[in-house]
Length: 290
Image (tube, rainbow, N blue to C red; front, side, top):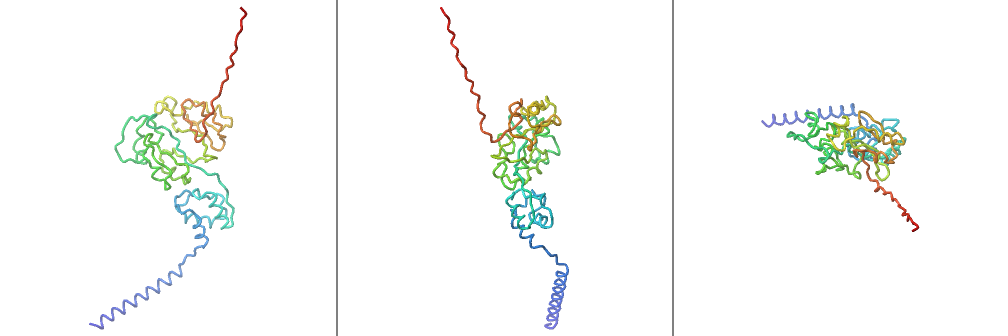
């Protein structure tokens, strides 16, 4: 009995040693060498793993940076220019500096200006709502209000406004990762230049219906009147499918378009209050000779 037990133990131990030897040989034969620069670059990245760079995670982006000869088109939106400069210095490569961007919600059709005509009772996600029906209002282009963009944001840079039912971007927290853009099935969120003091002018509407239909669905809808396009001195505004669009590169933030928009669908953010024109009236006393 003792001999058979000892034999079994020796047999198992021998098999264990053989298996360990095989695994050792295989690990050495199929060992994949990893450039130590990958780990060094990964340490410089913010470890957000947000996908804003186009890669699924920071490590894969580090691999792309190390293995790509020209990295001028590669950019980490969360780390920004500061991180990319460190990466370029580490790799001995050149990187293009990019202007910071921030997410903007191109819909201002809140509950007070875009009345509901139905009530959805199913699962509350924008993705599901977009697939099965056109929304709870007559506007089939605007925000669905179920907060998929807020849930996608990893930086707590967005929240849903209880009064308007629309998402709000906290500019100071926004990292330009683009997760909210990808999460929105209506494509109402856009990355636009942050500019100095976060000054922005953009059309807060995506309704492509004709004027009467758009205005009926939402009081602040763009009606395609072209007044903004006509007054723009830099040709930064184009009309496509009954809808105005302001090019953020060409726009000089003069705000002339804001003044002429009859439905107030153009949004201006962080500008100081406009100065009221002071009209001086001169009183002329008429003297008559009695």
